[in-house]
Length: 285
Image 1 (spheres, rainbow, N blue to C red):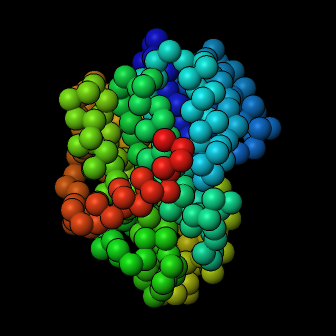
Image 2: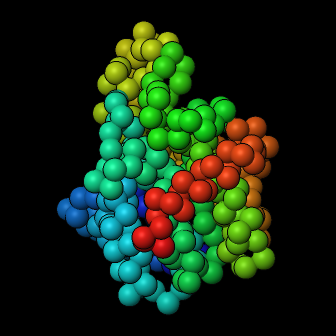
């Protein structure tokens, strides 16, 4: 990764920070992105302490104006971007709209990667890695893309729903850029005891899972506390020579290629998600 530049969103903590750490260790110049400027500067200083080249930018990528501003700042700093890792994750306990009027988890997990990648395409000369998570793979509900009808249910959550939509959007994006030298792939990190997961209350879980939340609270630090493990798949897709030129692939937490879930392969769902992203981001891209 020496001589290469990587941008990692949502990288002031959790899996994003560990992904950034892994890329710095491989010699990449890494640009961190976080909402809090103090945390962003602190993370950059900590990761650069052993000689790495790390910069910090501040943006809330759930908002389209911030996505556009971020892309412009990256263009000012870079003639070329070798890796873009779209890592930002949010999981509010109830349906929440951004200032743009977009449902927040859709904005973070689907619209932000779509828009930022589109804006940075003139700079991109390598890999786009989109991070899924939770329990993706269910059917994409075309009448509920922004949680209009249902946000949580017995086993349904909009978090998982949007992560499946991210996969569908990524497949379509991979088709769009095929042969251009840019690749778009998806990494599944597995579970991590991240700041986002630590802050979740029982109200944020589907109803069927809420009784086991106290047990999860006890077990998570021991089972999922090492965040370098869920960062392995994103570091692998961002850096490994083994995936050079691979496009439109899905990799598991063990860094192995896996079949796409049926929900992501549904062409009608891909069309619907892509059209919604184009409509929402139309004034920005």
